[in-house]
Length: 420
Image (cartoon, rainbow, N blue to C red; front, top):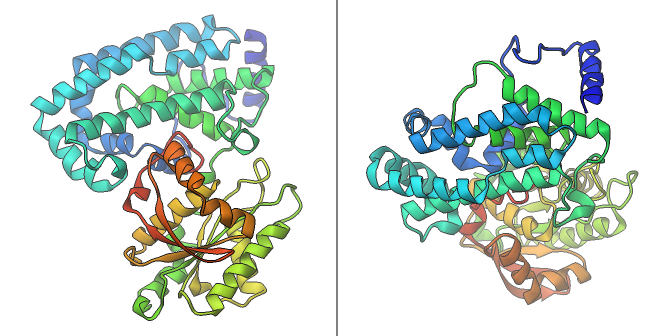
């Protein structure tokens, strides 16, 4: 392990990025995309970091300090002793049952005794909508469940992108490298060493090391899909967002037409044959003036680490082939599954102040449409998201179905970090 470690270090030095192992000359900062990935996956943790009072309360807490310092000591002592065992290294960063129990109990205690934390949960975490599926819980339970979601998300990232455990959709969401290769093992160990030993750490929050390590695994695997194209409001969706303010939605039967993507299974085609069909089916509904806006949904999903974004290519097709004005097209470039096609579209409607008490239409090919209208789709949403992102209503024809948005779509899902 040491041999490959130092070989890689030599390569890094030659490339101009060499730092002394135990004392970096400059503070390490994650790329801006990593900050966006963190915000979209772990709103609770970002909110804690940004709230000076709450951050200091948690940093000065005896129980959390014990967890933080023990992890620091274990990382420092085991970076070398773990040798080339990724499982050994990653286990140090993961939250075990004992830690999770201690964290839960301390949060419960603090919520009883600390008004600042109570206000933080009520006025920030609850009000954010990022944990909307827990809205019926008490403030204490909401905090505990939000933390549990974050801990599970970090642990999941480390399992999938650290040791290569298969995600739910392994064909498109897996680790980018051979986790058994010397190169990858050496890379992970060096990232761990660098993160752990960077100077002037911004805080000593009990979750910081695990959070930084999780984000580094996504970054080194090039899995930044959820941060691409942001901010949409200032880029791809700007013209449509400006136009929305002028739309009289009462003049239409539906608020929008959501066209689902169907990615190609090769690296040459920008759109698949079925994807092009979906677009034409959606255009037919649009030309019938059923809604003032088209939403196209699909990310860099198919094939594995796809170079093209379905929604971007669908928008181009709508404009170039069907001459739909850009101001009438919204894109969701993040969705990787049918569940999040609907969820992300609803999130956009809420964010862009479109009427969510008005029905929309979801359009796709016959086979896919049958699936969306089947009770099995609702069951899949409950299993993967924990809620229904929309209520599926009446079928208009073989390829179009009405749906009503649900506010629960705002809820984050870091178990799927590429589209949370």
